[in-house]
Length: 222
Length: 222
DNA sequence: CGCGAATCTCAGAGGAACCTCAGAGCGCAC
DNA sequence: GTGCGCTCTGAGGTTCCTCTGAGATTCGCG
Image 1: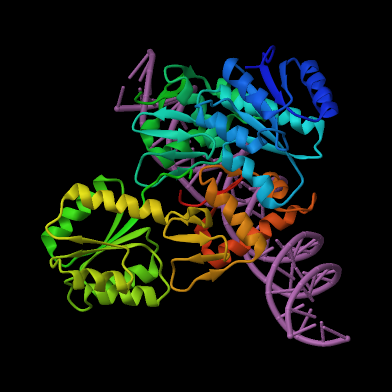
Image 2 (image 1 turned 180 degrees about the vertical axis):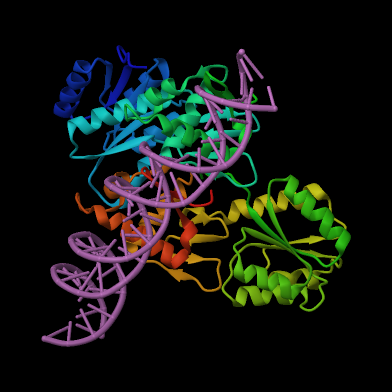
């Protein structure tokens, strides 16, 4: 997950100076960068080569940026796309999202923000999905809800973190100490673990988490 | 464009057996079906809720089918209407169409033909570009009004922009920062986001937008 | 069965996040 | 100019989350 060595990035940007700057920046960050100067070329590269993420400028010759996104999505390409958009009207800024882009950055932008968003994009797209199986129900990580019953059940941040851990390692037995270190910030808050197990049980039913007396807790009834 | 989720269909049919059969058929076809057994009820539902298409029988108690169409059109409702009729004379047909119905099917009819005509009706009428689904209601972007409740609710420009963004991405969670960058011009107006969420909730009900504590906001009841 | 240890349950403190709303500033229409 | 509606600010009140701690309950072993 940490190893972002050699993620392949396609940059579609017509402005020479900006293109140059960005491609060097991305390279310095460890990306393998492919550059296209217009929409046609971008489309061609995207269709003939594999990329992990794309950065596309809105104002492009030949094919406009948002159209390019649309065409790519129409071709079934699901690679995450970040759109660079000039500071315009609200519609301008939102249109990229509607076309199927995952994220957008408004120019002029902070370099650090752009890089952070790229990392977030890759991370988000890497971990398989936002859903974790809970038997009958599932946990929607991004919206922190458990869905599948009559009404969705909302979880707090901690509750969600804890449940995530259990759900992604259904057979593992976690000691209180494991959980304290993995989920809870504070070095010494031994009681908090028990409390949150209790909260989850209260919200989701006693069976979600099993107590292994003397050892710790485990995902229940998997 | 994005949301392929169930077109809402209102069926007004007094004959119990036929009503039952049709509503099940439409549901199986993927429509969200509302049923009324007489003209009064049909009128009431059409005025208080939003539908994408209506199927109305001519021979109705209380208010006759064609009269119902006329009343609906008089109320400014432009939802496409398909009329079912037992009689098939030219005059009948003309009367229904004059009243404002879009299409006409004579009983006994072929199921497939009925469905095909419904699809055609929806396709033709899909000026979805100006409409965004809000569950029971919809946002008319061009007039900046939310329609479908008792009385249409007028929104200001900002309110409309914000709601548009939520409505076109019902599952996405937007951070305050996302919203600030996308909807609000000013780089730093962190409080404005909260204020406009508050305005929308005050006008449209608390549930239109969900708070995800510590993360941001999301379209409510998705 | 009886006892200590482990676990469960829950009220509440403290702080962060959020909601509510009055009002100032601005632009536009008359 | 005057009035009105829209946008955004900022302050105060409220709600929610997190974690603590203490009493009640259950567990496992002799």
